[in-house]
Image (cartoon, protein in one colour):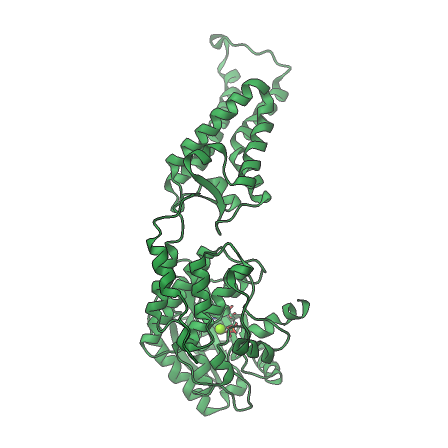
Length: 485
Ligand SMILES: Nc1ncnc2c1ncn2[C@@H]1O[C@H](COP(=O)(O)OP(=O)(O)O)[C@@H](O)[C@H]1O
Ligand SMILES: [Mg+2]
């Protein structure tokens, strides 16, 4: 799909400004860095979209970092567009919600129209999706829930976003997701989905069929676009791709995307159905409002199996240790190789060692699939780092001192002769404590992760799913009810 891949960045962009105008915008923008717009210092370019450029900046009066979005010059020439842009920004500034990026200021300086918003560290969901692998489905679910909450608050105040896409969804440590660019597309062009020169507004990859047809849009159009973003997160690619924007828009209107679970079988049935319902061609076949959507999404969380805690994992490990010591009794030091094979092979091939099997827990990746060879290897090496470090320490001590005569009569040793052994004992103790802390972390970590889980990106979960009622409820609620045409 070489062609499709190459065209992704341009398809992701919101279509608003034509090529020549973009070049004009670039020239104007390049002279801005280092200058001031009102009391905002423009520091460096963050990115460029269909409406203009976004800069990292500094609010010199409140001394806080901000993001400054500058309206492309050819849009700023139209007083009607500018008035609408300002009206929309003012309305949006009244919207306060943890999942919506806050607007701080809107204004004009020497002919440059701009607005200022909170600067988000991000990254944008688009850069997370730049790699062709799916995100862990539970993570995709949480991002979608966060975005839907922001959209619900906005729609309660009458906002339709019209350009929901990964680059307008910024990752945020506290809120999960913050939504950018509310209603800006509308402010540029009023209710019409078409610009004056006939270009369609929005990002083809995530555009609803009604938007593509130039029809009227409501919140269900945003639900469609969010569904496409969710599909992209779950499948590692957008529902439709192709070399031309118009081709992709047509596919949204007429084609059926490959089912989520055909592309990624790790996604639970319930969540796949939710994504597919969000992406129904007919608005009436989607969720009617955000309350319904959020109820379904939150229901899909119940599909997660419970994480195993410290005690269960500890007992499983003790069982494995007993088994390995029996092996060690017969094979001596070869037990180290045996342990390596035991943990790596069992975890990679079955997801569980005999100890874990007895306790009904499994090692998985975040998507609840089997872990890779690499993860199994990293997991073992981190798991074994303590014993490895001791071995290395012992070898070093031995090779440094093997010529020396060692006396075990403590009374006959001088203090200076004791100093070095004390250092070795301290080192060994530090290793022991740090090593144990790596395990003990399970007891305190919110996601019940040990150090070896964090570094190998694995989790340990119970095999059985929680009571099925909730799951069945969620499936019922999301079953497609097709309207007769
Ligand atoms: N508030 C913000 N904080 C940090 N970065 C931002 C902010 N707003 C926009 N950006 C960055 O600027 C880029 C361009 O934004 P934009 O003009 O909206 O285009 P698009 O959304 O089509 O990518 C975005 O991809 C994002 O990385
Ligand atoms: Mg944007």
